[in-house]
Length: 422
Ligand SMILES: [Zn+2]
Image 1 (spheres, rainbow, N blue to C red):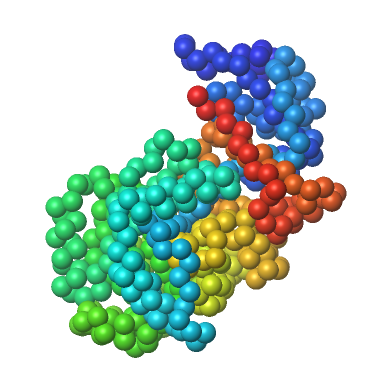
Image 2 (image 1 turned 45 degrees about the horizontal axis):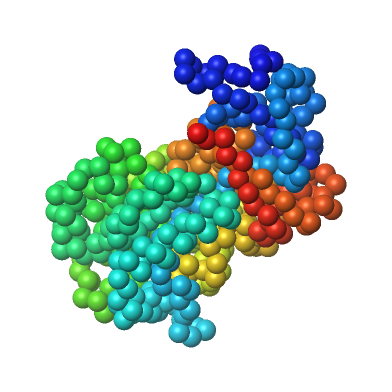
């Protein structure tokens, strides 16, 4: 226990430490603190607790008072930065299927023929907006290799997305990947667009590289229809595009449906992140939980495309704490995790606000295997976290009301960063 304003963390790392004090500190991994404090040194959080306790423990440290709330950075566990240039792509008609929407997206992208510079500029603006909204870590899935943005303050994990819905398509991608630099992280698009051989091949590569394997799962009920019966809008879509062969339906899926099929392929484990998971039945939720695979929900995108809401209550009951993602701006009205939390609260009123905030922070950090640095305010976490303020929080009389407002009032009036990184 130290009472010195300088803490020695190594031979060349003496630096001043500071106590950040605030009316509310929301560590996420431990109870909300009224009149709380976070002690930071260079790079790392040293202690979190009540101001009274920490002021006694570190009597000589300078203290900075933050009006408002201190909480961990948000984690956006699913975004497609290379689609930022598209803006929101609205369906052609009220009764459009998701396949119709995908067709519109592809047509618009082809017609616009954006240059690499335009795509990069729109992606860079999205990154900057995400940081301003309080996102500190994101998983970006793309069809293009974009410039690395190591200079920005957001940590971005980038995966190149692969599709191959036919035998020929799968073999072509496997051949391409075999020639690709082994350190380029790739992933699969979804079970409806990526055949079983390619799913297994990519998962093996992810295991070797120790990278996240993330794909869209059960976003639409037609995915199970394709895999089990070879029918539905995705079957029609593949036939129209000349990509239909004997890959689908997959023989022997029957009642175990899509999650059972993926389990048989041995691609569900702690390194797998399944995105959307709207159309999973009770058994699939249980099986998924048993594999240790992670889940990311994108409620804003699901609402925009009218595909339904994920069975969040059942996931939580099964022991899954999902992460939260915005998906791309093409299928959402804005890329705002505060709005995603609000939508979750509206659609799942019985889920407590603490769980919703956990999804937007520690749920994402765990899913991306970055909980050592992100997701909570706790000793040894990275000393980069949020300071938010707003008149909307003034009415909160207790922790419960504060969490209710944090997850339902939308983006705070002010979001700034406490950054002790050097
Ligand atoms: Zn997506």
